[in-house]
Image (cartoon, rainbow, N blue to C red):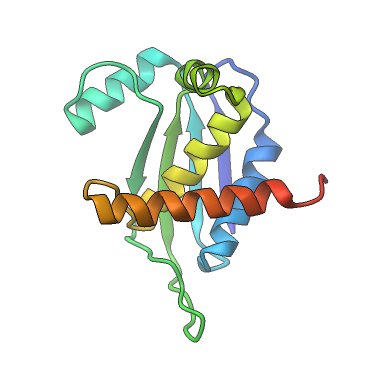
Length: 152
């Protein structure tokens, strides 16, 4: 798996930690071992510009997902499809505020946003109540499994 993480936010993002998390989520979702993912952490001005340009929404947001090859989770009895999963753009400054408001801190919020973004890249959405239930249930399950692992 090729996972590239770029910290252009000035936040001191733990690149190794988020690379391991992304690999864990992609493995759990049976994404092809040669799939490619890029995660970029940016400041609020940059994500606000991207949010307006690509989502037609004003202001900074927490995460943006840009799927590439429309890869989907692999099935148990099937070889997963090879390709480029896509790009995630995270904003640690927004994550910090959200993590404080939620009572779990910045790291947990960035883990949630990374997992959430990867699920979006795999075709999950939460616009409809049933989709929301499925996506957020899977997100919670993946994060619980990630956090239950012994520290490395």
